[in-house]
Length: 350
Image (cartoon, rainbow, N blue to C red):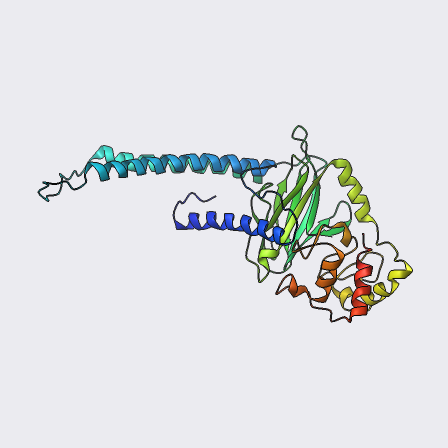
């Protein structure tokens, strides 16, 4: 955490608020109620620690601002030009040991206090010990979507991270291993934890332990290309029972299609779709795009750019650029009959 109050700190602070605003605006554009992305309403231990540190730093900075501003106002009023002044400079004072000690020692003490407070929070978050029962998830950042691997449970999801709620009395955190498939990304859900980068050829880690069920929104906080602003994500915090039920559903292969959508599955399996996407139980085993085995269990598509319904799904297959200009998914150039057939098949993937 930077202790510099100069232009760099102001730029980073403005960037953080801009990211929050873009996140909520992007979800609103998609028609999905995003909930709060405020850093001032923490719902997880790491976010709570950062929140209290931020209040402490803000209080110290506020006190410095009031002291400096008050002295400035006093000087402006006390030593302003008056009628009858002879134009001479006021007496100049040099070599005051007390003043020099004050403006040297006080800033050093402030920096030391802020450093120790920040180091304490960093140590508590970075060196946390995880109890038995910790949920392990590997997060892989792609242009421009999120892959969530659940190695303990043996399946892969996309864009919507499901985790169990953590009881503050008996914490059951979720540990996230962060990887990148292409360029730099940054995982940030403001109400759950601080930002952590995903860097090619490097493994980073973070953890969350949400205290309340619900949907927490975030996004990539590191510019990663054309559609960085729409690389959104949702963290869906569920009760332990609901999470286990979701896990059981995600482990299942895709349901065999009925006769009414057999044509759509045939088109899907005989086009380039299978080169990028996986559907468990079929010959589709691509790794470049999201796993579609349980596509319709997700609330959004295109990493949160649109609600997941038949109309949007059909438009996404037909012309991805209509939702995310510059998205890496190509338009499939299907005729109307095949497009409807593929869409009918995709909506059965629950």
